[in-house]
Image 1 (cartoon, helix red, strand yellow):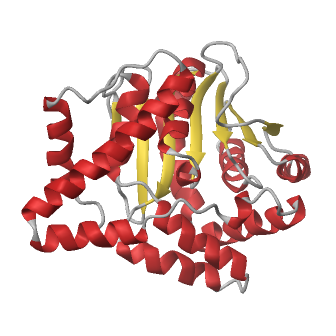
Image 2 (spheres, rainbow, N blue to C red; image 1 turned 180 degrees about the horizontal axis):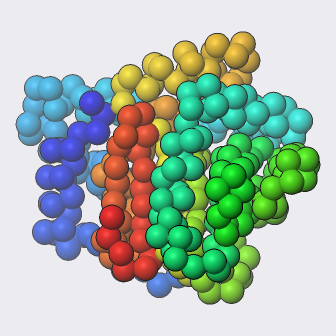
Length: 304
């Protein structure tokens, strides 16, 4: 529910037939604005399709529209102190550890390098964008160290206190890991192919469709193998379950962020559209191992 796959597929086909998709863009600014417009147009067309189908399709479409929001999470509030933001992302790390999500993420990411790391001893690099206090980056580096894999991990975020805390933990644990102050939406000019994997976990919904498209397009330039975006699955169950799980930590703002996030999760087809606009290709897959949606965009010509 809320994925509206049948209705979305018809809507997208209508846009293709009308020549509205896929669009052409020439700059990152144009990519951002164009993607935002296409997603808005797609949702309008899906509403029209749902109206024609009526019944359950229309009811689900109306429910999806009622739940959607563009509100900003507390942890993204520019007025909130960095100390309070750190408390919120650390709460998210605790929740992920409780739900055993990090081992799943690590297994997925290292599997994309597994064949290469077993046949060569060259160093492979992973860049995580919007890594918060570094829960996933640390879990990746710990597993790479445990398995003696030639993998280096770089975590990054736009909040200086996150970088400070991440580097403190990396030094304390003696991990092949460092954290850098980076804006995921506006990366510096790394050398082409600087990273083997670029990763973003549980942050896709913090960005507009256009911003996410720009991030993927930048990844295509700086990454040799793949961009992997992991987020929550858009569903009624998570819209109720995520804030309830967050409420267990007794932090009202964290519970509110859980509700806001669940309302902002992208559907599989929205991720599909964003990736195709960003790359001009269909070298990507979207899988949904509950309760996740995982977008994998390949840059090495390999199919999953």
